[in-house]
Image (cartoon, rainbow, N blue to C red; front, side, top):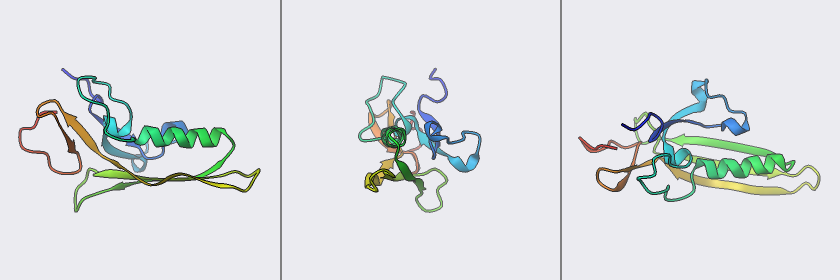
Length: 135
């Protein structure tokens, strides 16, 4: 039996590490564990790209370095779907000491995909999964 949270998460749009509240529904969206962070269940491969955690760590580093950061994460949906197909991440840092603006993430799209041990393929959670597919 796989523990809850190994494959699916409630992603913080504003990460906990940046002060995001995990008890506020408007800050949460359904996402795959690997789109959110690292895989807990090591039977599947690592996420095939840069996930939310990757970009969040870059923002945290900029903030800790004294930058003021304009940051947004927008869930993207397909049609009337209620689970996002992915997340668009944008962040720009401003260094008040130098006045320099630094792009951190520019229209970075993080697909909301989950790996299936059943068929050995990645599937987007925002689209209907095939009937009987076991994750």
